Length: 344
Image (tube, rainbow, N blue to C red; front, side, top):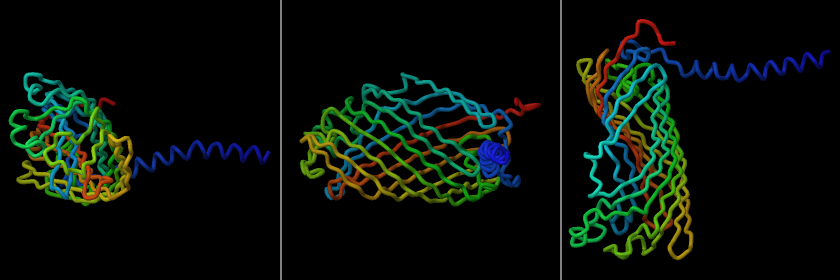
């Protein structure tokens, strides 16, 4: 009988433990806002009209030669609308072909699952991306003026990349500082306040072309010690820290800035045209920037907001590195609607 009782107790404990852990996590994530600073509108329906442009970039940099190759995709400007209620948010964007210039920069096929989640204590950035079709943004430096005049923005429709990134940051002053106010627009920060931020990040990326990513007809043939590679893989892990501050003028006009820097390790593989694979482990530098400017009140929001991430990975060739970046620029017009009773 004693053994049976012990078995029952073990089963009950195993079932309760996950629920207890979940309860503790939810309690830890909860914040009692300082209402003199933060006005909560998560129980309202926040409706927005917006214009948005997501982007990604890939740079190959030779510090000894003081030269670089800047690859950019042709990402469209999207116009759309969206809404937030409690923890649920939905945005629908539409591409307007007459705004976007395909003849000048070429066509880019892409799937960008970029997502930014703002909790009271945490900011979480997720990147899952596929891009195919790039152009060279600095042709004069890469090929020389005469070639660039005849071939503005040379296109590389063969270059494609796939990458995943995750960045989680802890906000110390969660009672008085709000990331949600400028970025989700479901809160209203009425007074100036800031916060220290610490976190960690991981990044995995692969970039590949049908031929060398360093063009054969580059003007400076000593670039990258004449190493020509058609594919590269990057994996990194880093810790980061920084500071965020929102300056509020007369309760409604605001400027919000946030900068964090990261330091860690990366492994980089270069797949050379000669058939060899060159590998190295080195320092990883990164930074995340968030900036917003506009007007906020209990009912209305109008503003511009930007978030961008850049990682810098050392390459096997001395005094060289690769830089990968991604982000989003958005303009938003917002109206909040108070409900007579909660939807659930």
